Image (cartoon, rainbow, N blue to C red; front, side, top):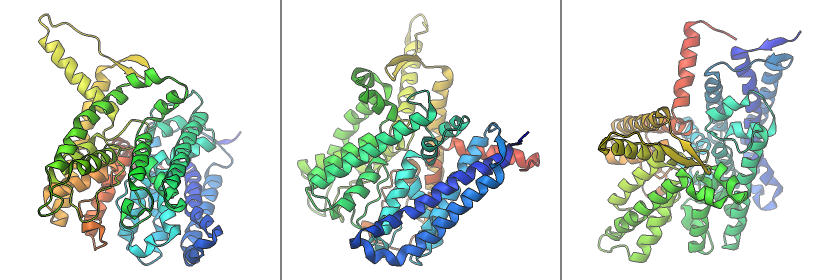
Length: 507
């Protein structure tokens, strides 16, 4: 009779699988050496080869030592959260080594870059010397590729595990496309890769160089926002307006629930159009795009000149889509400040975020839609002369669904928790870095939501690389991590670990 692996033996055994994946991710930039034009990057081979191989071999050994000859038990309550936190923390730390080993980035900056990549944020501390390396810019895009769709989804699409659902859901994949979990993950991954391929082809047709087109498309669909050029979108060759339109489409695709994408492929257009997330997104667009237009139109792009109407609609619409999808790309030219009113509107957009089951961050359209509906239902019942109880239904995936009191409470509760974390983080950034609270609030909100736009606290003014306060970077690190795992997962994991320590549970 085989022994059973359970508890922390099971957790660390599963961790070995993910370590092997992280090792493969670190090794992947080496494939660029097959292209003769990139041979100048040979000097960076050890920075990827050594940590990549060590992690790959270590992960395989850990799995076979702990789980090789044992039956696997089911993860206990909240152990899925513990495993998920360990997976993401270790992935971030190990993936920081290629940056750190160059000697061009401090350990804090390297962790920051790795966290920003996996959390698909886009805030960056990469120095100009490493921007010139195709290997490092491709590596950052890879971090956003895997972080955007999720490490658990990648593993789930490759292997079938009857107990994988808890971990799959814990990472934020709330809905399966089909009953079979691994096949559902493969469909999502296929859609994800398909969008990136189509986006890359479209960008190449628009005049963008193939390498830039691929990395830009990855970051747009992952709603990450890392650029392969120091000066961002302005650095790409080609038709700039076409590039911006293609980027907007890719950002919206990435920020839309993959279940809805699947329904569109099945031809269920009317059902998708009635979904609460699509309706909420449409309402937000109707409100914020005109507001962004007037915010830019009333602002100054220099000491004496206003933005034109054409510039206002172009910059306002693109920046709105970039923020509501929590991507963080900007088409506003370097040296031109975004008007203060627009910054306030963008902060609100950061908080709202994209769709559930997408690559976007923030509170999400679904929670916002439920919260607004619940508020409306409450007012309607209170204003009813006979205190009638009305049915509380929404349209979800083409079907009418009743919203329970628990779901409404969760939507309001998570929203309040999110805002509280954002205010505390902004306060810490302001105190530790001696920045004004408005700028600190914007910076931390973009970190927490995964947007990645900076008002200069992280990247320096006008994206000029300059020293950053290490304490502020660590606060932003925590914000990016909490935002990617939607806060509650971290709470559940800490609760489980503390409880197990008090009970003195071991492997």
